[in-house]
Length: 169
Image (cartoon, rainbow, N blue to C red; front, top):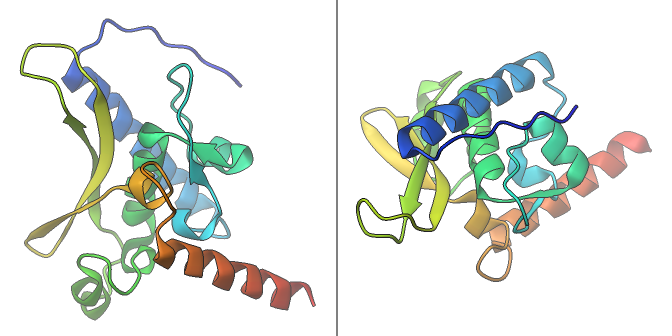
């Protein structure tokens, strides 16, 4: 289904909608535990011609997305899967695993290169809190926005393919 919403741009309104999408992704991921984590899927960053905000199902089917859907997918999986969504080397991993957090407070955060009160280029990342500490994750950067895909993500893809092959045989 394709739904188009046109808004006069307001940064706070956009952020509320992106965080609604993250919450919807969390709901989807809780109801479909077989769905993989973002960094295990093979989904990559790709710039869009026109702004489309996709849920995790549409993103997986498409195989790519830009920063808005990637950040909302990552935030959703942290909310839905908690410590299981973090891998060694990611911020808060040790604490989240030690506490066995079933959910992690996460949200989409906007960054920009423009001056205050002037339109500019916005970028979405994921911000999450483990214990008292906030961490940031930039799924777009890790999935190829500024160059090569993060080597840790490539290793996860390889492990996921191996696991899938083992289950099939």
